[in-house]
Amino acid sequence: MAKSTNKAKTAKPPKPDDQLTWKELEIGSIATRPGSASRYKTGDWSSRQPEYDLSKCIKCALCQTFCPEGCVKSTDEGFYAADLYYCKGCGICAKECPRKVITMVEEKE
Amino acid sequence: MATRVGMEVSLAVSEAVRLANADVIAAYPITPQTHIVEHLAELVANGELDAEFIPVESEHSAMSACLGSAAAGARTFTATAGQGLELMHEVVYVASSMRLPIVMAVANRALSAPLSVWGDHSDVMAVRDTGWIQIFTENGQEAVDNTLCAFRIAEDKRVLLPVMVHLDGFHLSHMVEPIILPDRKDVDKFLPLNNYPLPLDPSRPVTMGDFAPPSIYTEARWAQEINLEKSMRVILEIWKKFGDKFGRYYKPIECYRCEDCDTLLLTMGSFSETAMMAIDNMREDGKKIGLFRLRLWRPFPYKELRETVRNAKNLIILDRAISYGGPGGPVASEIRSALYPLARRPRVTGFVGGLGGRDISPADFETIINRGLKISNDGSNREFEIFGVRE
Image 1 (cartoon, helix red, strand yellow):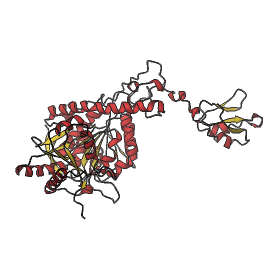
Image 2: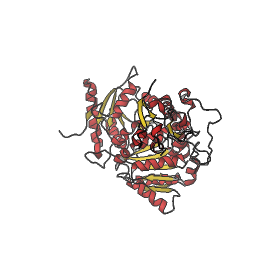
Image 3: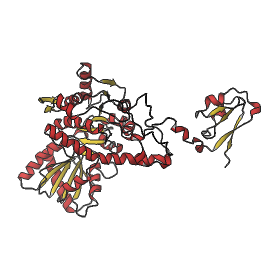
């Protein structure tokens, strides 16, 4: 078995992906820092976003449970809201909400 | 002391893996590769090889297990053939793009349907573009030697790519041949311990094979391409070192009586030794005909190829696979493309034959050469001709 000589090029702060040259990639494009996916704005994929009528919300958190992106967070008031940086606009939360709190609306520019 | 033994080539390949001290073998038995895997299982069960043998449920799993094993820094081997190589196809790409040094023996086999367990190169050609280093062997000794070289090439820090060692199903895999098995001490000296530079290690976690958006995918692909091209230099260096140590030298292109030739025949794999007999016969008749074989299929040896055919007028190529509805033989197609930029180049005539285990005898090779010369001289532009089909 190999002895671990795990030397990652981690000294410098990460460059954004769209500035890295091919020579700067680790072998096999290995990611040597945790959380690189958090920089990736999956919200760019969406064309719709959730809109909330909080007067009907019972804070059951099913929207958070079912969100495949894991982007629904609780707010200071104890309600729930999707983080639009990551929300792909799939509408599963709206479909699952038992109180029809959530409506998917076309994104505005 | 190296020992000279009479041994089935499949078993000899397994013995090479034992001599290389592989750490992990994950493989699924499939004809005609079965004896390689069976013998390795036996060696591990008998305690003659201290390795993990993972009897996976499919070839897709075999290659997947190899990814994990190589990523952990273990010396990793697998073997497959035909349909098995097809089933693992998806993961074959992942091994090279993740730059994992895996060695895989492929006992080349035809593809279904109709079902054929016998040999040809359909399976190889389907994985041509997977980014692996690919070496063709012609006899048992070459299969053993190149299995050893494959580990060293794959694990070299300047390479870090998986390597396929091709041996023809049955025509080579099931032959009993005299083979020199090198001494363990010498192999240990030739083959340093695997030291993968960035292995899976809980104390320094990394993510392998993750997601690449359009902003970075092209860079990842280009890095892989440049790396495979650059591996050529290291492959040559390691073959030289192997030769210096064991006395058997290998080259990307091997020539047989190519000197002063008007006409060259190109073959790959075990049929080459049969073709040599045809060359000998025709040479005796005073015809200036030689044979060369592509040992290294990837990275493609452009320089050596152009050098080899420099003075030839005719080049006759035998393919053992068909690219349907296209150029016919994949090898002939690549050779044509490689020679196209040259101002002076031989006329290339392609034949497809030896499919699904059908023999090509020395007399058949003479027929192919004569027919190739006729086509070459009559100036017809046909892409290829099939050899030996009953009308």
